[in-house]
Amino acid sequence: MSTTIIIILLCIGYVIFTIDKKQKNFPVPVILLLIGIALSFIPYFSSIQVTEHMIYNIFLPGLLFTSAYQFSAKALHKNAGIIAMLSTVGLIITALLLGTLIYILGGIFQPITFVGALLVASILTPTDPVSVVSILKQSANDTSISDVVDGESMINDGTSIVLFGVLSGMYVHEKMFRLTNFLGEFFYVSFGGIALGITIGWLFSKLIHITHHKDYQVMLSIIIAYGGFQLAEHLGFSGVLATVASGVMLSWEFDHAIKEDHYREALAGFWDVVVPTLLTLVFLLIGIEATSYLAHANWGLAIIVFCLSIIVRFIIVSGTIQLFRGWQHILDWKKALLISWSGVRGTVSIFLLLSLNTMGSESVDNLVSLAFSVVVLSLVIQSLGIYPLYKGT
Image 1 (cartoon, rainbow, N blue to C red):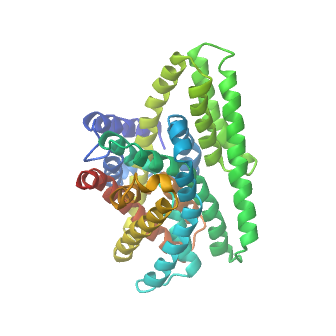
Image 2 (cartoon, helix red, strand yellow):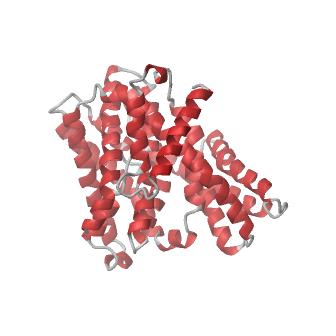
Image 3 (cartoon, rainbow, N blue to C red):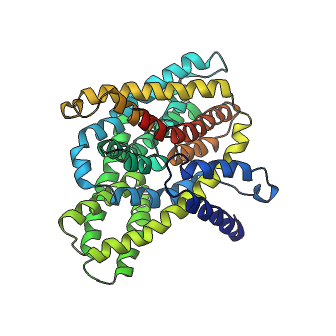
């Protein structure tokens, strides 16, 4: 991808972010996605190649770190139970239930194996709140909804990647599923990443006191976001969870140990520029890449799967809420619906799709087209619907 193309894409992002200041009725990521789809029909942009490595190693670390360090440690502690349940056990149950329904109903439209249906479900389980959290925070008086949606999305990204890895191995290499192997890999990858991230975040919070120059302190934040991610991946841990854990650890240190206000301002000044830049590029590129898959999608099945994903998530969210007494008087079914609807699919799902696409076969291509179309439906319909849905409840 040439420098000229990057500059053009950033100019488009600048215009959209400038026009859409409130981001209520038309969330910026959706507009960027649709513009990206339009750009794909222009020959000049046809040479762009979007890879899973680009999404995973360039865009995700920065977006995840910013979301994590800005996330309130108090909110995480307050909602730890429901966030942990939704992003681990709830995610696995969601994938199993959704996968079963896709297998049963999908066979009406196209041949699909049970493992293939589970694989599609695993791609659709990670949530990306970029499009909706800002709307929830602006619209809702009760911040618990946005806290749960934001917190869940940070953790379930790592969980879904582990689940996808196991299922893709079963599908492509026809491996047998062994619960002990899955649990062993899951705990190693997940807890290893979390432990490494907490350690890096703690060390980072101490290192910033060595220098009081805010520019060098911001430089350390780049190291923790991308260096911690790559170190975890090198060790076989989850880079996603390592980056999230380090960011959350930094958030906790802000409340307990780091008292320099200038550092908070410098950090915000830097990452508040980086994040819109990353969002502009990633959603425009997703739109450009999506067109070829959408042209061959089975839209009837895609719409059914999209509706099933909303229903299954609502069932899981409602059931999870009942397990936590402190939430029963805070959330009714309408707010459970808000949390369910706010589970928009995004960057991690796209990474998983592109990863699956590299495994190439005709059956894989069908799964990728199906899942890609559902992700696009989720991004557009759920993002555009969150504000009217909130006002309606």
